[in-house]
Image (cartoon, rainbow, N blue to C red; front, side, top):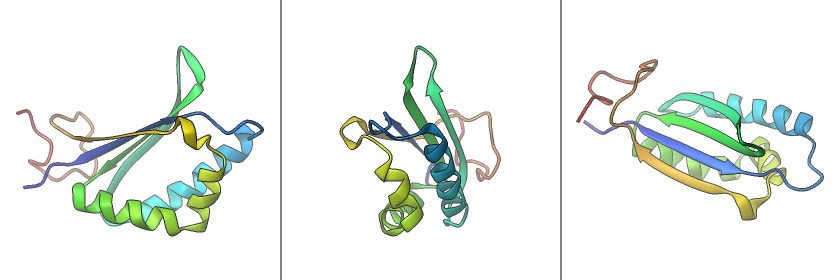
Length: 115
């Protein structure tokens, strides 16, 4: 069985972007994500020791779901609005296989278990 995937994005907002606009755009992205096959969970926050660094974490059923959603993301107008608020030179994207998870909402049995 394929393992669940977590996508971890860190970034800064583009100079001049307002946090209020970013949060509104992020809510629209959330609606987009919820419509994607294999979407499980998302959280958005700021780094404690440097609040200018944002962290967006998205859990997916498997790698295939991640790839399909990534392609659709770039074509979606709400997602484009979100991306226009980011300083693209600061975006770091990490994709990780989930080995152990305490939050099992939406994660199929056996998809995330201790190795």
